[in-house]
Image (cartoon, rainbow, N blue to C red; front, side, top):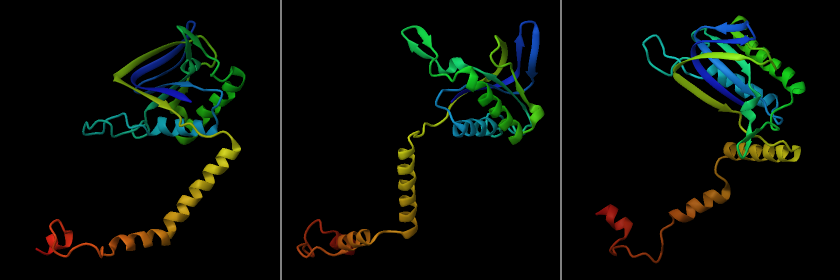
Length: 207
């Protein structure tokens, strides 16, 4: 999943002659859903949108506050063209999720944003419509978000989980026996080393 997050002083969506929605200071988010996206991708994007520190604090320090800290608005606009793949100079959108599935998926993202924040501060365009999006970028500040890729093969997922479990067990047990033996072996004095030869580490430390 991809999102273009812009800090704005104002943004609005118009369809035809009708203004669908508008916000004041806050974030305008263009959201592109791919055919491979899952709820995990949606959760990541929602969390990042709400927690990105793109605003200043009361003392003017930049990059310290997120949109929730200032109780600012968020305008989301569905943007399938973010999933564009160029074939020469022609854009191809086969990697974008089809409208049939993307619409309920996109609606669930909006609901997640509203439930995690304040519903009245989350605004939307009109899914599938030909929209005019007016953005007053503040800064300009623009951040591109891409949800991290993850394995989709169940066998690969299971293998990844087992590897993580082994790592956690290793950390909880501490160094292994073989590891402690290696440390002990390295700490033993070399019987062939001279006690006072030039370059001998122990002699240098004692002098």
